[in-house]
Length: 413
Image 1 (cartoon, helix red, strand yellow):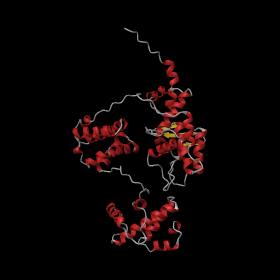
Image 2 (image 1 turned 90 degrees about the vertical axis):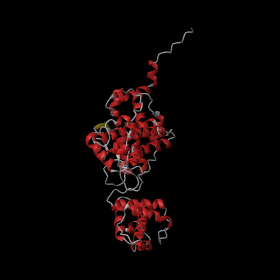
Image 3 (image 1 turned 60 degrees about the vertical axis):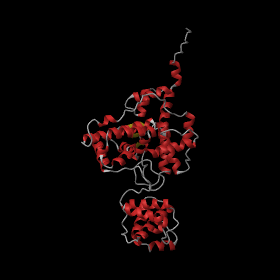
Image 4 (image 1 turned 120 degrees about the vertical axis):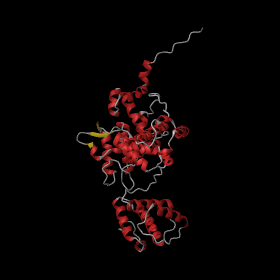
């Protein structure tokens, strides 16, 4: 299997003399099945061969890939003099090691760092409780974990450290370092976490009252949206001659034409499309399935991606990464990044939070300009109440001008 990635006979012979050649062959087979390119597979296999050589030299078992041992190997790299393994960039080498350890542990191949991932016994109990008692989705729990990662690191599975002073100080620090949206979402996660600790008897009753309520006025802001010509520039920005461009255009069409959220696009599966009925089944934030009409333009974009852009993969998700391993985006931020890059390529101001949501707002604003009612817009956007849709009434400036009354002149005293 090494011959699939390496073509130079002396290099293949040297790798076959390396300790753990059976592991190398098994890893190479897995990389091939996962769709890795020859160059990327070569780098991962060279990094693995280096690790196995180092393990044998220090007298360790070749299957010893614990975090402690990997940490020692990383510290070895700056002074490495292993014959045949010098000169490889450390970041590329470490990506290969992470992929190999994931393969050894039977996990999905993943080469990125996830420094914000906080896994503790306390968090696992909270996640299980929220799934069973509140029905929270994995997406929401992932967001909660990201918001509370610093607090969880401080607690270190000791909830007794939480008191009124700590909660007040934590919230004040949020206000100094983040905007109103971040503070509000973090205090919501914190309030849920403290309530769980109270219910399970790990915190005194009433402690959640120490978390301040963040002021928020509904309909106080104007939704950020793009003009029709800007939308067309964004949709035309991907290079549809490439597989990535075909994928990005299909994603942008779903966001800008159908008003889907980034999370909706992330969760789409192949079976959610009914080609005969021209419908798309979407599972929103409430996890209820909704059938939406699939327009010709959006359908053509998806077909072009499926036939000419989507890599061969066992995943049934509609959109997958363009780089091996071919798996779905890790979270909705991947979809939003596609929208952000498209706005930047189109010369549209991309300095906004949630580029994908800007396209959703733009779809709603376009429907409003074409005469759709708020009830019709709420149905397309899948709002449970038209109260959430009322903010788009502020976008119809022409109609608002007809309602506006002249400001009465102030008579002199």
